Length: 77
Image (cartoon, rainbow, N blue to C red):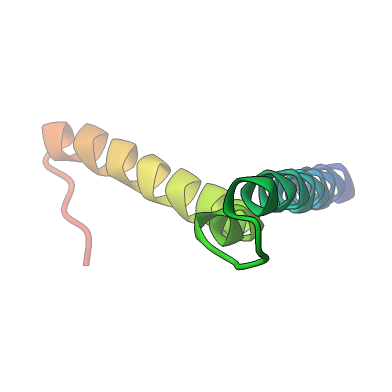
């Protein structure tokens, strides 16, 4: 893995983390105005945005690779 690819990966996850934090803050403020008190509800899942993105991307790439390999008769394990 070269430096450019590592740097882009790090920047991507830093941006996803910043977006997750920003979305959480906005959602928490909105939820506070709706509820009238502070509580952490579903908006807390926005903090997991980078993890969800990473896991989902990996699962989809593996799934696509498995579908392509199945057509060629390739068995893994």
